Image 1 (cartoon, one colour):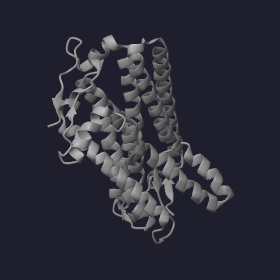
Image 2 (image 1 turned 60 degrees about the vertical axis):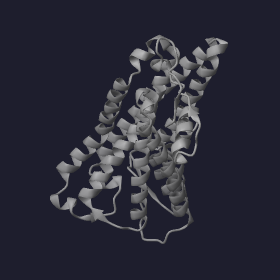
Image 3 (image 1 turned 45 degrees about the horizontal axis):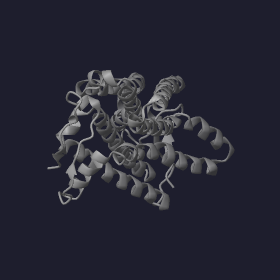
Amino acid sequence: MPNTSQGSEGSLVLPTVQYQRPLNDKVVIVQVFIGIFLCINSLMIVTFFKKEAFFTNTRYIFFAHTLVCDSMFLALTDVLLLMSYSQVPMPGGLCIFLIVILENLTVATPLTLTAMSLERYIAICMPLHHSELSTPVRAMRCILLIQALSSVEWIIVISILFSAVPLSFYTSPLVCSFEQMIVFSWQGHLTSALCQFNFLVMSVVIAFTYVKIMVAARAASSDSKKSTNKGLRTVILHGFQLLLCLIQFWCPMIESAIMKINFNVFIQVRYIDYIIFILAPRCLCPLVYGLRDKDFVVVMKYYGLFGYSKKVFIFNMDKSNDVKGKKLPCTPVR
């Protein structure tokens, strides 16, 4: 059974074990889930880059960014899972590099979900300003801001590590986990404070967009109520996905308390935390956003079937892509 390792004060959860064991059913289950969703994510990423019209729509840009982040996260965590489970060491410098990437991806996903909820709020509650505020250029700038904010925590942690460890640390073999990056106990308190601050801000934003869209849904006319209700459901699903992402910051405290009572129960709880709060949120993205979008699914089916799907693709873009109030003309997939 895989054993996930997590920073003692609410940082990225990574799988670790204490001794070498053969693969069992639970490890195989993890491999199956990750393999399936990596294939789905890869097909969706290819679909996004194949169709130029998606580049002009903000929500698809954010969706593609989330897919890339989640795919990288799933692949890297799976590699570390297998290496940690098999007790395969790596040089400290390589471990630092992987932890930096994973820490960035850990924060980037919930921040992108928050940005997607804000985009839906602008589209539904501020339709007259949507074409001005929600543009591809602004979306790319927002992604750069998300990456910058995601870098704050790992920059602090790694800066402290560089100043405290000897040069031999970078070449010494070790089983990689975030715990290897913690030198002082107060580092854990600092990272915990940053995580809780992120949790608070993103939760407030999600709650704000949900309430505003819900009010708009009640006041909407029968013609626009369907679109508004769909936006409300999307925000609810984003909120659920974001909640799963952020609960991982609380897992260390719960796991530490359980470990003091019963170590076997602690092992089981840690495995469940890894499945529910680490893998599940990253696997929900294509289900929440991609497969619910009929336009995207038609194009994905075309490329997934290597062009054997001959359906005509009709774009149903937001008002940001309208031309003087008229929808864009229908275009074939090819």
